[in-house]
Amino acid sequence: MISPMLINRVKELRAKHNLSQADLAKAVGVTRQTIAALEKGDYVPSLLLAMNISDVFECRIEKIFTREENYENRV
Amino acid sequence: MKIGFKAFASTTFIVLFGWSMIAMFDGFVQLADAFHNPQSSLGITITVTPILAALVVIGVLSTMTFLKKRKTHHSWTKAFFLPPELEEADERERHITGEACRNAYIAMWYGFPLVTVLMFVYPFVSELIPYYPIMVLLLLPLIQSLVFFISWKTA
Image 1 (cartoon, chains in turn orange, yellow):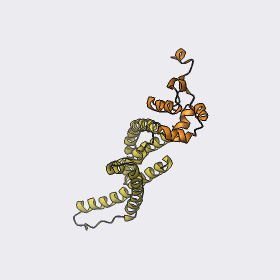
Image 2 (image 1 turned 60 degrees about the vertical axis):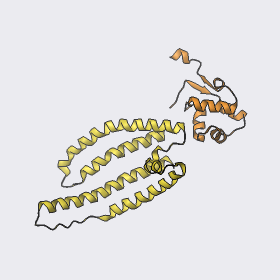
Image 3 (image 1 turned 180 degrees about the horizontal axis):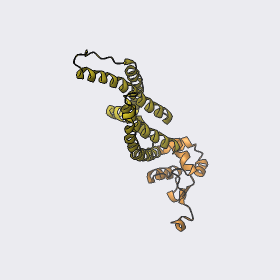
Image 4 (image 1 turned 180 degrees about the vertical axis):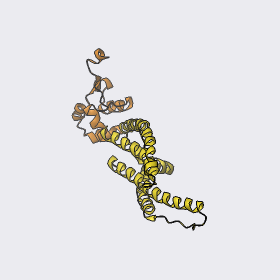
């Protein structure tokens, strides 16, 4: 399940918005464990979940989820 | 419901089912003997302890699971027929279930030749363990469910 190609700023933005993992999980309709896995980079969310997270943070998806810089060189 | 409890419940189901089938098998062996030897009596003796244990334990666990699932499902058929292992709370759990099912499917392809080969032993142990085929047959769901739960746990 580990995807080294995607990095995210969910933990940082969650702290900025003063949200707990449980709060964010409830807001986007997933379990707290999913948010934890996502923050650790163990889980790549679906597009729908990424959109829901971006709605909560009022931020564009690409500002939250980005590919690793050397991704293009590796493929 | 925790995955560890689900694994324990599934393994218990399989073991208790196997135990009760062994008791039933013993009864059917006696019945077959009675048919082959018309002089003997038609009466058979079946040990009811394993059957009762299976009915009670499986009944209690199934009822508990059904009542718990009934709260989340509107349809009682879904609550009744859907295995508790396939109860996913979100997309990540659905993904893990998908991976675990994939591994359980792979395990089937390794498990069924193993089970078939183990049947070769039966002629040598048929006197000692007449119910050996039941044990061997139940090895397949046991392997598959163990692989499923280990995959889930390690995901």
